[in-house]
Length: 146
Image (cartoon, rainbow, N blue to C red):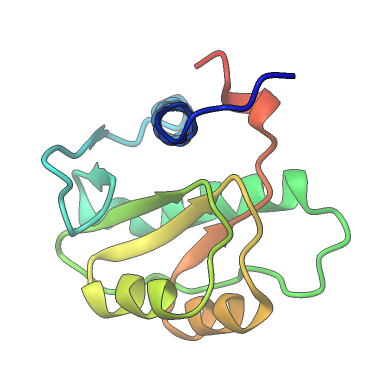
């Protein structure tokens, strides 16, 4: 098997991120939640939710996604609505832990995190305490055709 170049690896990561983001937007659209992807590496998040009144509904969709792919979960993502007038979602494809979670929390606009990978247990607790819903371990096979 031929080794993948560094560039090919980065392209693959970006493609997974894009596909997961599009899949999440499709899930929200199915629930009649107006949203759109952000541009220019917006520090507020990857998906903008247009109506802050939809925050609880968005977080419920995220919790449902989490439960679908994490049957034996000991930490349920039962976060309550984070109060923000500018709600966004953050999309991750790599293992999420440490400083990156602190940055997400401190942003003040993120109401949910959706990850194709695992979120560390301490990070899950921090997200929960911050009122940020999360879904992790979304299989790549679910969103690769998005």
